[in-house]
Image (tube, rainbow, N blue to C red; front, side, top):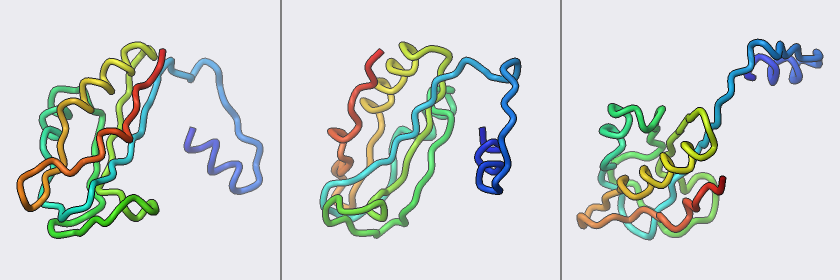
Length: 121
């Protein structure tokens, strides 16, 4: 897929071999926070180690302040989930959203869980 995007960017017609396509479903989610000061993430490493999360990433540093959701620069981080079916992707997504936290300097979860809506299947 990335090669196809690069080819398009360079003005070339991309080649996609149907035999190379994999039947996967992918969700990339960005995480936003309520007003507060970022301290650390919880649950992400464990879920990646369990194979539930494919990957996760942090965009902000400890001490970063959040004051609303106004632009992509307000993202604290994100995560990727891959599954063989849409149903499994949806179940993994729900499982992750229930278990991850963004902890603020006051010890409370400041993550905007409400912005990570269910994936219908």
